[in-house]
Image (tube, rainbow, N blue to C red; front, side, top):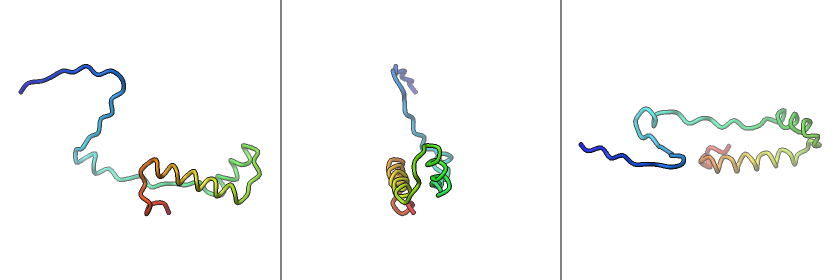
Length: 75
């Protein structure tokens, strides 16, 4: 068997396809609670209201899309 050496510059992304790595369970999405939103509102001096819930849900939805969560998991 011949071994070939290559020079790589910059970051390298390696994906493992072994059975151990494939068997790792997917994390469960944990969203923000109403209490979390109220605390953040107070910290940022924002008046809490229904719009804050809608805004947070929209952000969570976009994060789920970017992180590959299927639509059926977006409940």
